Length: 195
Ligand code: GTP
Ligand code: MG
Image (cartoon, rainbow, N blue to C red; front, side, top):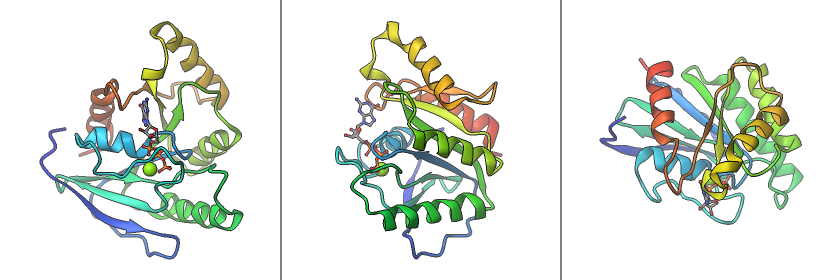
């Protein structure tokens, strides 16, 4: 995808009405701090248009980035952040549910998992739930730069087994530092989900 223009068009909090967009949407889910906003920046060729932070819980809203007036990249709030109150966790969960369940333009959901660690119980719940909503999530294994090359296959397998992925599910290792995996993600989005 050649990025001509980007625009953070809509920001939705727990009390917001969700937009009824006309363009296709691609959403990114994953636990807090896994690298969703960093991935979206990499896809947009920007360093910090989507706000990122070393402190988990940065993105607390659903952010719709309009790309070239062609489509939206949708940044979802992260789950599993310990310092968030139970009440807020429930409210965010409801917001994400409202979106995944209600959007008419949502074409694909990417689930981000840190390639270094076994998927958590929350990761598994999120994966199963996305599947239950009728999507075939694509897994992005993030922070690839933190592994030695010789460890990658083993960790990809760990993610596969840990999530108990439906056979045939795609896993794309990705690093927002080296941008490895970026072209493959765009290629997939353009060939499978747009047009
Ligand atoms: P929330 O908005 O809190 O849900 O987090 P997020 O999933 O949007 O994560 P974000 O992109 O803000 O990144 C969290 C931290 O991880 C930041 O310090 C990033 O610089 C770092 N990070 C993200 N992706 C990578 C990566 O591929 N490699 C490395 N080494 N660090 C990364
Ligand atoms: Mg974020």
